[in-house]
Image (cartoon, rainbow, N blue to C red; front, side, top):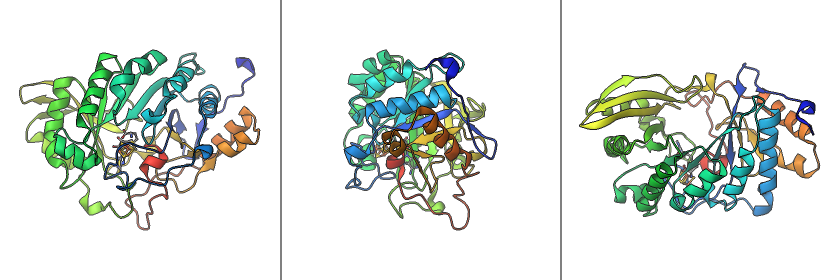
Length: 344
Ligand code: SAM
Ligand code: SF4
């Protein structure tokens, strides 16, 4: 179909927000078992036939970019590097064009395992940048949190990302009380010396059941106070109005200065400026990480729905996006699926 005949919709919701940023989960499986995300024994993985195949992922990406106004795509999981065809999917995504005629911005959220061997290929396929998760720089602590002794592999992945120009390389850290608060300052030192953009994320109730307590939250404010004991901090706003991280310029301690982000998903939710839509690895639209309902796209696709019909289902689902996640409100219930099954 020529571009002139494609009917364009936007993913607008009843609260006036428009989604431009798509998070696609490429698998619910993972080779780590981070304590805040997965139980030690893993989860019941989705059966292969119920998951999006490569052509189905690419078709949804085409619909999102060409018909629904998506400008940024982030691949996630589970662990997206476990998808062998990741390079092929990224190359197909890089060939798409938004209504403005540019390729969508493509990024990857990964635990970094195996990235050292794949960074060059991913870059060549069209990947723009990566976020790598790292919750400690001390090997035993890293192993305790991720339940795997793999810090060396992650560090090799981070170096490869820098080498291949997958920048800015962002490092994501979830801070947990009594677990890795003492890693906060060493992580900042590591990031400033390597030129990585570190972002601290408040722990959300999206892990194994009953492992999250509001009273235990290490808030963004608390992390900032901790940093202020060692560094000079200056607020520098956000990258964009919809960006979740509040950025702080961090100087001192004899290190090159740089910016550190604080993502206050729980203590200061940014739902009113949220511009995201999500698709799980079994082809369900989720309007929010905390949504308690999902809208199936895989079934209609396999039943022969046309692209305009899939786009209309997706747009209809987004219209009902809730105003906010309501973590702080009475009666809040976390969703059935946990983070790795949704796609963080
Ligand atoms: N496996 C990849 C990784 O770890 O980067 C991608 C998927 S993971 C679910 C995406 C992000 O979600 C990671 O940065 C991880 O730290 C974060 N995450 C997982 N569970 C979380 C939770 N309960 N609260 C806050 N962030 C969480
Ligand atoms: Fe795996 Fe990422 Fe969850 Fe850790 S946070 S268990 S790496 S999906």
